[in-house]
Image (tube, rainbow, N blue to C red; front, side, top):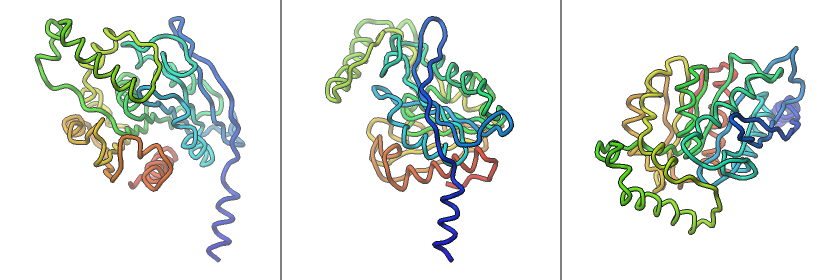
Length: 278
């Protein structure tokens, strides 16, 4: 009987079509992929989700997760941030605009239920998704995977101090070393990107998202985005919110495994209006 129920459940899953898409603003063209569940259309609008990859990555990082969500009836969009993958432009202080452009593109699709949309991001993508959610005030679901914490040091945040060449050189060297070790090739406007990263406050965006179900996922072995550095932002986040902490490293939550399965199930339930449980 159990095997029969499993078979029926699998048959009820949506088949998924994949469509390359382009969108953007201010002369920057971003490349993405739209994952569309079977049966979606004007007569049957389904929830939608935008997935935002991390620093130095591309949309492939979320490809399998996007297929999973789409097979469960969620129209899903992945894309390459500016300066990444096959998208145009240079990584700078405007990456939140990329998320908003992706949101607007998905929002305008005839297959999507505008009242059931969410943002999902990993690392830099999580950071950007939180800021975009704060500006849009429309997301019903927000999933932040391995999100970096904000800088609390007032000296570093002070523009008169941060623009000092020595501080910029140190920060730039750290990112460039990361690129070298991981063999990452990107187009970066270091000054604008670093100033954006240092001065931005995700806590302010999170404090005003009362109508958005929020899930924050961290791994104990993550040295890039330690969960304890995000504690202030989490404390400032308005309810409803949940946190999921597991073993693993910085990329464990986007790799095959139980952790990825757990946050995917939470996301699917939340976007379909079911009470989410991690």
